Length: 189
Image (cartoon, rainbow, N blue to C red):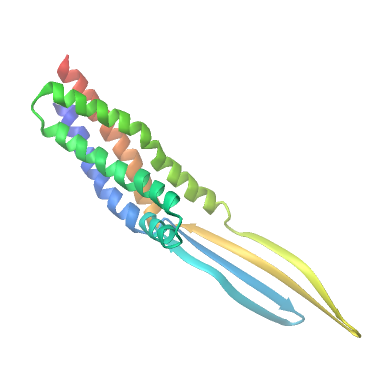
């Protein structure tokens, strides 16, 4: 019973990490275009975004990328909430057989929760663009005049607080669910 209580408590803590993890920005992305013409420089911001998981889903939905938006919503929001809900039902269920069935269901759903980690990996892949830049020297001939200029772009990305909360959620939820399941198994023996 101690393991079940500890596992359930860890799942509640994970839920506390989950909420800011999906609401706060996972990362920020800033992309600038720089044009140097002689001694003059022009800078324009192309992208300046801070995206959370739910913000990303909303943006994908507005861009009519429904499948990708749904998959992120399903694996990053619906599955974790369902898992926590089932652990709570199993914790307060007094029938050992029902507890074992719910624990097995959570275990099967838990295999899908690796998609949480996949979402974090996608965000990390985006972050790998940090400080990437391109540059090209261009020249325009206009009869007697030659104009040389340089075009460059710079991409900066940073991890946001949502990333840390969501990563914490993934780790604590996994530990809590495993401890809870061991508690259910040991009680049935």
